Amino acid sequence: MLNPSSIKSTLRVDTAITPLMAEALQKWSLMYVNQSPWLNSEIKSLNLAAAIAAEISRAVTIEMDVAISGSPRADFLAQQMIPVLNNIRTYIEYGSAKGGLMFKPYIKKDMVIVDFVQADMFFPVAFDANGNMTSCVFADQKQIGQNFYTRLEYHSMLAEGYRITNTAFRSSVRDMLGSPIALTFLPEWADIEPEAFILNIDKPLFAYFKMPFANNIDPTSPLGVSVYSRAVNLIEQADRQWSDFLWEFESGKRAVYTDVLAFGKGVDGKPRLPDKRLYRLLDLNSKIDGKGFFEDWTPTIRDVNILNGLDAILRKIEFNCGFSYGILSDPKLTALTATEIKTSKQTYYANVVDTQKSLSDSIDQLLYAMDVYTTLYNLAPAGAYTAVYSFDDSIVSDHDAQFTQDSTAVGMQVMSKVEFRMRNYGEDETTAQKYLELVKKEQTDRLANRINTVRQ
Image 1: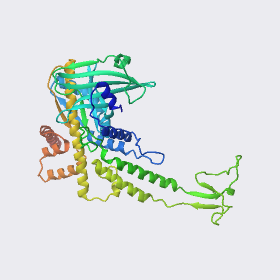
Image 2: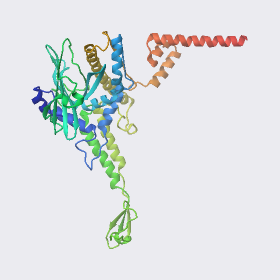
Image 3: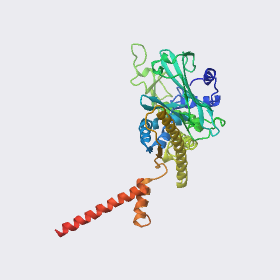
């Protein structure tokens, strides 16, 4: 992560990343890439941070669909959104781990391309009264040889319009900007304008996806926090407990302690052991507690107790992350009532729905920015567009059980077949009625064929 103070001194702007948030963001990032600060040769990792981020991302984006319609402009935007939706799960995982993600569109030939900027590569500058980000600095860094080249793209909403500036730097240190250079120094930046000014827009040309949790690291900060921000210490405890479990097996390996005289010696003068993992050498004058040359040592493994302790920690992590019990912990080891299971599923469902709402809001803002660029570069005819979002709800709903219950209700004639199709097949009323009419027609045709067959 670039040092925010170097951005402040270079661009003369104050970033909204406080030292507390910068430290937390660095820790979340290290945890995600399995480099937690507490890991060493003795403490091994369960890689829980990445697993937690992957799980919430999967739940949020599974069967996600965005239908954009209304005009040829809408059709163009829908086409540009295809790559975004194809990669959305991966990048929401990054955003979940680091507390947020930025969607930043730009023009390439006749297309609108969207950059996914992770939280440690953008620096918020200003927010409005509702906590919406209005100004931000984006960092694009490349390493060539021993040098680091950084481009800062500063977006700012001003009273007179929207301003974008680009500046480039070269440094021998990754987290410092170093000396200014021309944008033309690198071929990939050569076509970028140093400054642009856009009129008649009322929203930023970027979209901030923020994890919908209260910021318990710095309550004064409008930035999002990691999905595992409230479980950092618990994740450390889980890693330590897991390491104890591994050590229990390592230290408890079967061994045979033998006198040095039990084996012949090699050319180096050392005893030749048939299996170095099994045999351990002792020099006790050919006796081990008076039992002779060999003594077997097979300790009792305390695996069950250690695993039960680990599972208790995992349940605490699930609670602090807003997950259902059994996602990380072993469901067979958790004695829960039906009410407790339902409550934990509802908590997880609410967590996922809130994240989906935050994602929908950020995509709405992304579409606005893409629409502005489409107009500026005359990429598609002017026109209105509407975005409709749909997500999977299977986290809290058991579709098989619902299908069986609804089938029984239809048989009892307390539910219409139209309602049945709408609930179980996700159809609107018109579509459900159309398919029921097709089914009725097929049944009538089959009956007519049978009658004709009998008459013949």
